[in-house]
Length: 290
Length: 302
Image (cartoon, rainbow over all chains, first blue to last red; front, side):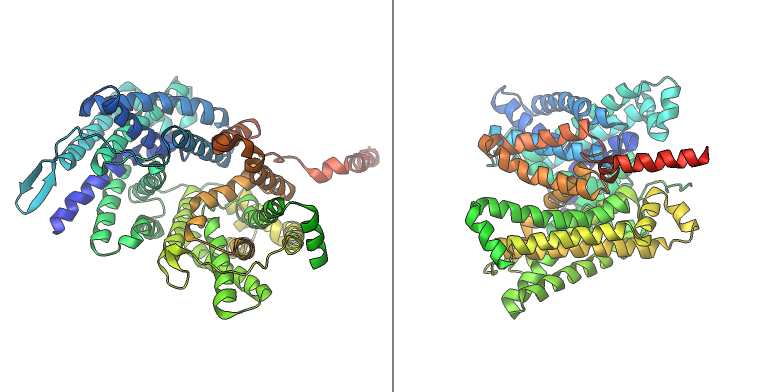
């Protein structure tokens, strides 16, 4: 039973981690809480559905299609809603992000209506048994896909030139631009990466719960943001750890009979962690200077 | 007071009265948040939670215990202030976005608790609240709030808060007890949110925990940021624009919220410091007087 809950928690947690990575990467470079990120995830899920129903694609087609659409959307969003505000106060950019989130949510509500849409079955519901643990095929696919994507992200950030530029920009924005790094393209690339991961998360969740709705990004986005802060915002391993931690804790909490308090579990954990480690589990301590 | 209310109610459409009362209530809550975020510079993304504490506190007192409206309203405000202090203490260690996310988390926790409590009616909400809120009461309280905020901001206390916002380490080294001031600012801001919440409950006569989610908190934050952080006329203007915009956009029916979102982005992009941010109204109105004084000053100096 316990092992079973761990598997369920890991599945949920790896999706939180995929979304949390987008928050943390954007925050790491421009210190913006991209509140429209949950909406990108929702639009990714809808694109996944349409890839299957309209274009007749399978699993890979739907996930890649969703990633492409969301990359374009994410980069456009940054250009229109955030770039003009880069030199303004952080709260101004935050309000713009909330505006973008309301806009995207309502655009999808107008187009698709408020009712949840089922995700067409592209993966059969086979169940594998490992000892006493049951794992469904879709859970296995979620775990493997997230692991592959995170490994890929790690490779890009560590070894590819643009990834190194991202890390430089997140350490010191101004110095990085003095060293000849094109900050605008680095930021666009960061949004593209984050949006692609969120799109994958959206498609995977859509398949897992067999439901896609215009408001699905609100709570998921908020919890993924919690995961990013829990792990230490700006830290990529932190977002992965935070997502997994939150997913497992939430599943355990529900299994322990706290299902009516489900949405409060993530926030309670977050507050407890921040009280003891004010910058999150893997966050760097903030230096205070006058 | 009742005479003025009945006069207005006979002249204006009941629907517009309702919108105007709501606007007044939001102004009170937004001015409270302005003290926390605008003046002191502490991010609070959970203002709707204190609004909810005030709403539920006052409504439960009048509905279940028969307490008079005025006493219930003040108790609701005090309860919200207490909630603010309880949340404020642990949150003092945190700064910036971390404080923001913790307040957001507390807001969601309070909403979930209200959803699960018996006395609040849980997910069914609390119904049967008397309609005690009138336009006269609300606007008198708006004036009181403006007066209190204005006095606070122009006092030693207010100047200390601004010093904390500008540079907390420098403020501390000047002998300002940061923690005490931050807690006080939080409590006062939450008190006004609680008062507004009590008025809201006694206006709509029915409240539900889901009315007080983080979407509401962000709405309050938008009022303050859009109007101009720290500026009292700015906050009032921002609240008016964002509360009345959906009403003016009502003819667009389905596209209303779509345009509302786009409007928020556009307003931030074109006025990043808020509609009245950086505009000193006093200087604008008394321009000549200031200039004359300045001219005299240089003449005397030369």
